[in-house]
Image (cartoon, rainbow, N blue to C red; front, side):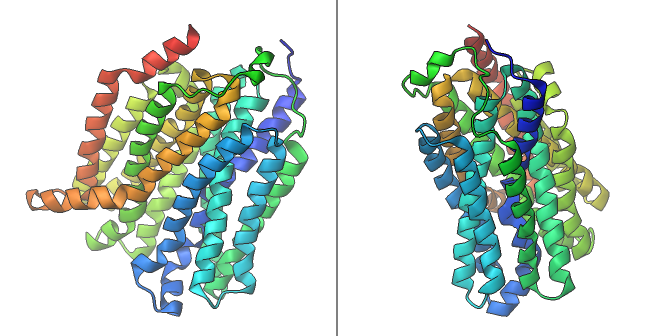
Length: 396
């Protein structure tokens, strides 16, 4: 087996991690929701389509990229094209912003590019880096995704505050910088890093573990979006803090995800059979802390660990998929995984909110209900032992 040079590995890792910062690009406009709703006389539900519609296009991107990466199209070419979609979708509203329908179209372009980048960052790791580097790098992608989220959301908010909500879109200059880094550092012709070079001629085969990972990933996204959809409203309605403090809780979640992402590789090696069930249990305890704590400090702590739980799960699933299928099947497997788990984010309010309505007379709220669901899923994940079976089958 050829051993790639340290310089090659370092450059490629930086390039791939830069691509992963596009994973929350569609959230950049969220600080301007109120201003946009006022400008176009929209309801909150209508203006939230600027981020809910991109989720649907992320699903589409997962399937499209899965097909394209399994073809002869160069991975770097696909990655550059995905980032260009984000750049175009982000910059067009600076010139044309009198139609909300046009803003939705631009958000969909960003969502398509974001979904493609999310998928491609994992494919690049599995195809361009040696096996010993993959788990730690896939863990770091969650850190860089959260760093990107902080830049897009906080930077966009600061730009909007300088004059008008239209200035929020200038934050997409960051995606242009990522494009430059990708052009410079991601190799067009990667060095040989896989022992089984003949596997590229194999037929694409998706085994049960791909769908198991997608199944559990669906529930991770379903739970994770509970925080995104409800924490700001919860802090204000429960009189835990002002609107500015409510917005800060989401940022704290991103910081939790960023910091935990730095050690996801270590967690994955220490808990190679239980890291996914661990993430569900952390979700459960965090949401119970928020739901029953009735304190701004406890809401901050809970939000921090929700971000950590997200990092653990989303750093592990792509690695588990990459070791469970053959080299020629990784791209399509990751595409299917992204498409299915994205549905969890879309349907989250339609599942969690009705459940909460049923039991709210028992003194439960959306966070305590989500915490109970997460703990049940964590126990189920332990009992079914899917992660141990996957890892052991991959080693045999």
